[in-house]
Length: 98
Image (spheres, rainbow, N blue to C red):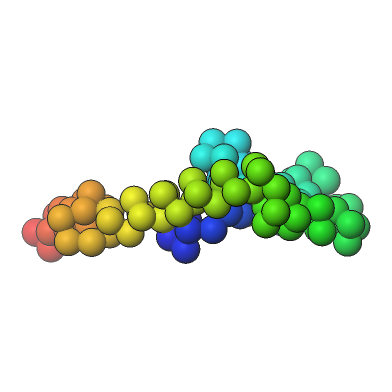
């Protein structure tokens, strides 16, 4: 999400199904090309084109693009000095060094 673009999810293994679900259903910044439950199926080129067009040209895609940009700004701010992620990481490193 740090790049600020919607995700076209195509989960294949490990943590990808969970990440896809979080981004698509939770944050609503992506669409599924092919779901985990259909992972053994071949995806038609038409399906890939459909999802790309929805994200790039559709009303829902424009909404997702804007939301992804907002999330990107928040993610970047969290990693900067004084940001929540940077502060939490500094606390963790300080704890390890004790």
